[in-house]
Image (tube, rainbow, N blue to C red; front, side):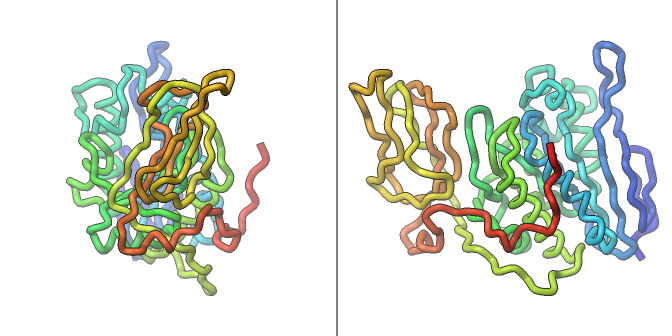
Length: 346
């Protein structure tokens, strides 16, 4: 049997119970109460404690839908081992205002570990770390790109940790990044407590992307299987090819103008390849955006209007060992990896 006591936000959740909890946050200035929605699912058997979080940036909504669909996997979750904590909307303030930040203008993912006496953002970070992350062994944090950008589905984690690398590979995404933690990030603060966190990226803000959502749901389910929290598939799906990269770089606009993209997310590019064209409004003057390294396009701007110095293409750098050949030119979501669940109608 699993440990009899698991307490979160002042509530105990015994083994074999699935419970929805509203964790109180600071009141609104109308005196209306605001809370962070949490769902805790405890298996009857022992296993790891894992949190799945989304919308740390309030306008990143693909992760909300991934958690929504995860919680609908009723048959699988009835066989869960250990404890699963799902937080579909961490930054409730930002979500209500369709913005990345909290009302004090701060980025929640730069304010961990936070403080119970600090700014509003710092207090939310402190609460999340204390009540949720610190009680877990692993975490999966779901993100999308920032404003006017789009990301290829990929995972960022400390891949020098063999256990983290094993779980990250199970996600079956096109690219794994061995990414350093940033000061103030959830991944760094949780790591300091011994919690292993993987960060999934995919899509753009305030938009549902069906391929990204399906890829993310598949990845989360695969990760839970890799942690032995869910039973293994009877007939495992064939894994797609994954590239492991240690460095990334943004290619920036050398001048302002109207930008036309000529490559796709997931495309393998080489030095000298043309990625886009920047022109004046008449098309009389054009300047090519030329790649100066070998890599895979993992992110790109979605706004055609650019100023000099704007970030255009985010590339995962590939070394010269030949690993680049494992990536296909354009990466699509294999249908065989999509769980058997009908997407909801909106």
